[in-house]
Image (cartoon, rainbow, N blue to C red; front, side, top):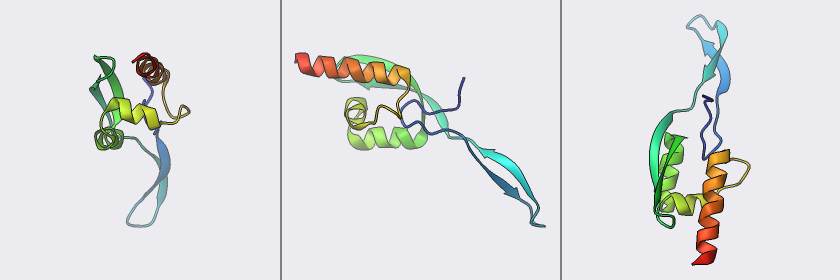
Length: 95
């Protein structure tokens, strides 16, 4: 399972661990990923996604999964999230 957020595209970063003696060794900064169930109001379904804590706060701030995906860039989204976005767009067009 990859360590990439399905909604924001946030992945691992690399940097240095710096000791008290100023010795530097490489390390990885991993995103804070959580398995979350989000509900789409338009589709009336729930979706289980692995997203970062920052993306979860953004989803809440924008007013839910539907509003978040409407503004999200396609390049940042995973294949599953793109499929959900496409289904939401079809449902909005039909309504």
